[in-house]
Length: 604
Image (cartoon, rainbow, N blue to C red; front, side):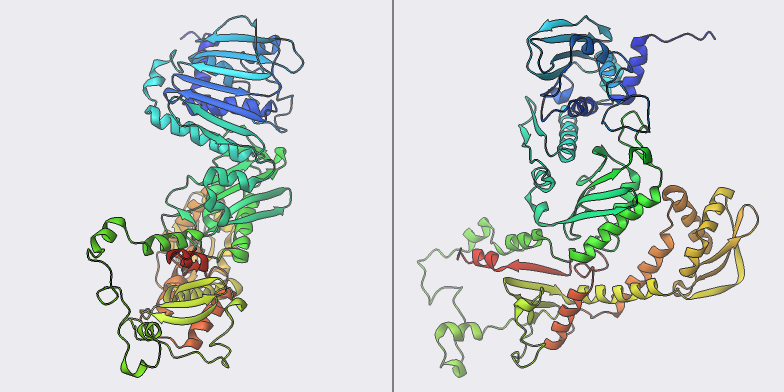
């Protein structure tokens, strides 16, 4: 078979298959070009989900006619010199514009600062027309029409206009988070206008624009460094979580990335604090020497490779866990909002239960209970409410002001002072500005688990020797990785050693795990090391067992507690990191502010 050189148009179309997968990919590349050009305002307009029209306008540095003719040619860029290890811009390949021009109708209109007039150039299906003078504002406007008209097969694989428009919105949101000093406007016939005004250097204000105001009230600031890597950003408290990972954002040197190492670290940082199937909300910026990260992994530039992945992962996990231990135990404000909604009667039920006859105190179904004979000396209102007692609620004895644990001033403690126990499971505590409702079983379960986990972390796990060592056959490279971590496994009660070039001998297993599938555990650890360069499976098993034991050993629902016991539980919760969630990730308490309570009664 004869080898021949492909045409320039075909080369660009092949590149477009990697760089421009869908309209959102084109928007990403064009917005990155605008940011690299120093733009402070970027406007994006679309039609037909981006398939019919994409227009990106910026106020950046602009291009001369000569620059325009170079920009639409393959591998021409102003962003890269000769060092591929020192990339400080979002774009550097010089592939985006020629790739788009090979599969669409592309027009560039630009004027640099100081020029009296602009210039325009067009590319249609790979055919380049000469640049020509044109009236233009400072900056650049790129218009893409009929995307993939030159490659109909690719056009058939695009999703619906609504789905493609949603993907474009996601790209713009990520770029807006990455660059809070830039104003972004997304508009078009197929969408309502989405605008993100500049917030300067206030990242949290920009995050609130993108993710909503709730995030500001439930975010913990992250700022940590290790060697040549710095991590900043905001992570949500564990009780502020979502049903998918769409609210997780990461940026490496300002570049939006979707890196599996970062997501793995984020998942590990929130282990034991979020229910299975729920995801934390976080926006993280990683600043690192460009020489220590490879952004040239894929043409789409959404994947990166760190020279020291263990360092980056450890920094993320450690920084977030430290932040959660510092201030992550507070209840999410959305819990109070849900409680408010639950308290408010729904309109249909309210209408159905409203009495038709004029209201009278005697006939009202909502009147206070009649006073008892022994309470006749009290006023009608006091007697009515003091007589009320829910059958399933426990009426606690009056608190003794002289007893320190009985009637503490609420302002002295974040979780307040216990006032009652209801349904033999929920503790109601009064704070200086509201009330807290605590699930006693979930709270004590967390306290017991943290005590057990601390014991596991501070001393070696007892091991039981196997009468006959179990031999596990593995590829040599897996054996090499396992042996490197043998000392860590030994502290967790797992004793292993090399048994020939392609096998591992298991001589000890953690005593608390009892009889177990040692071979299955070894293979799982080998897979984790190959994938993530970390082996957390054994530690997770021990933590899971500790969590199970804590569940069975904690205060059960239905147990009546004395005031001293309730207050002691509250004080332990305040002193224990992670006590805001049980071992299964559910909240252990919900806080309701006094202002919310007053709104329920129409007092504010």
